[in-house]
Amino acid sequence: MSVIQSKAIKMMQVGGPEVLQWVDIEVAAPGPDEVRVVHEAIGLNFIDVYFRKGVYPQPLPGWLGMEASGVIESVGSNVKHVKAGDRVAYAGKPAGAYSQVRVMPAEIVVKLPDAISFEMGAAMMLQGLTVNYLLTDSYKVQAGDTVLFHAAAGGVGLIAMQWLKLLGATVIGTVGSEEKAALAKSYGCDHTILYTKEDFVARTKELTNGKGVNVVYDSIGKDTFMQSLDCIKPRGMMVTYGNASGAVPPIDVGILGVKGSLKLTRPTVMTYAHDRSLLEPMSAELFDKVMSGKIKIEINQRYQLQDAAQAHRDLEDRKTTGSTIFLPR
Image (cartoon, rainbow, N blue to C red; front, side, top):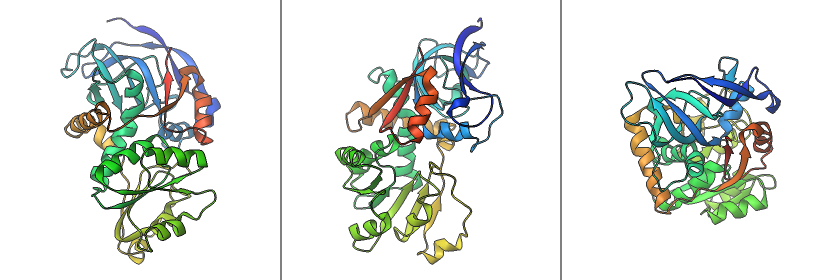
C-alpha cells in the first residue's frame, strides 16, 4: 500500500484559534492493528478546544479532532471487524480527525449503518456516546427523577434532552439566551433557566419545591461547579464531565458530606471508546435511537475543514447550537 498525499489541520504550539494550520501531509499505510480512513465528515467538540489550549497536554506538533465518519481505504493484517469499503464512524483518542485521510487504531472504529448519513455519523458519535454513558452509567436516570443539565442547547444537551424524556425524567436546563431556551424546550427540556439573568440555584430550588435535583450534569466546570452542589438533594449525584469555563479547582471532598452526603464522578468517553465490550452495545443503542426517530441530531453549523480556526472562535463565543461538523474537501 502506497503513501497518500492529503491535507490536515496541524498545531505547532498551544494557544488561540490562530495556531491551527492547514498543511499538506503524507499518510502512510496502516500498521497491523490500524485502519486508513478517508473522512467524509468530522465533528467539532469542546474537547478540541481543551487540546488546542493545552488544558489536556499532548506532544507538539500536534493534531486535533476526536470524531469523524468516512470509508475504510485499507486495513492492517490483524483487523477483522472492518474491511476496505466499509462505512465507519468513531469517537476517541488519539486526536487526528481534523484531516482528509488518517491512519488510526482500529479498536475505536465501528460500522456506520447505511441509514445514517456521514454528516450525521460525524455529528453524533462523541456527543451521543457521551449522553449514553452519562444517563445510563455515570448516574442511571430513572423515571420520575429530576435532572439539572447545564448547556442544555449544546450538542450534548440537545441529545440529552430527548434521551432524558425517553427515560421519564423531569429536565431543568441552563441556557445562555432566549433563542437557546426555545431550542432546548423544543427538544424536551421542561424548564429552562437563563443563567445570564437568573440565579440557577435559587430557580432550581424553586422548581423542585426546595428539594433539589437527583443529579446535575455539568460540562461548564469552574463557573458552575460549586453552585451546582447546592442544587442537589441529599445523597444525590454530581456528574462533572467538561471544563468549558475552565478546570474545576481542587476541592475539599468533605464539602460533599456537608452538603448532604453527595456523590461525585468525573467520567470521560475514552473509558468507553477503547473497550469494545462497552463501545459496541453503546453505539448500537445510539444508532437504533437515531434510526427509529427517537433521537434527532441537530446539525446547525457546517464549516470547511480549513476554516477550523473560525469554528473554534464561534464555539468558544457560544455562538453555536446543537452539533457542528467540518467538511474535509
